[in-house]
Image (tube, rainbow, N blue to C red; front, side, top):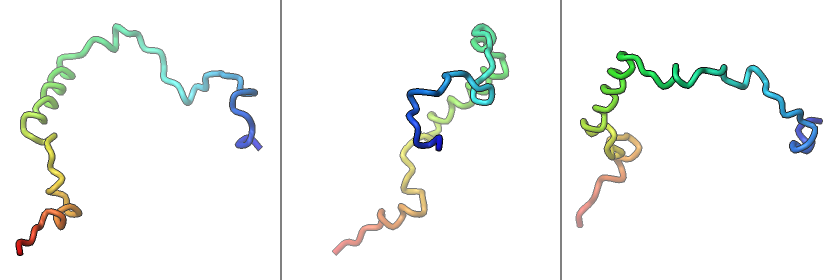
Length: 71
């Protein structure tokens, strides 16, 4: 049974093709096209519009904990 064997021995240490990425040149990955730069510029706006802020009180499951009774 393979599940019970020692993983540190007997495994050939080879790279399986379905678990690895193809080699890409670093220069091709490092150069961003103008379209990608525009997309990243739009994503930067999320923090300015407070979309990344603390908004857990807007979730339905947390609304009950925000109600306070005053005696």
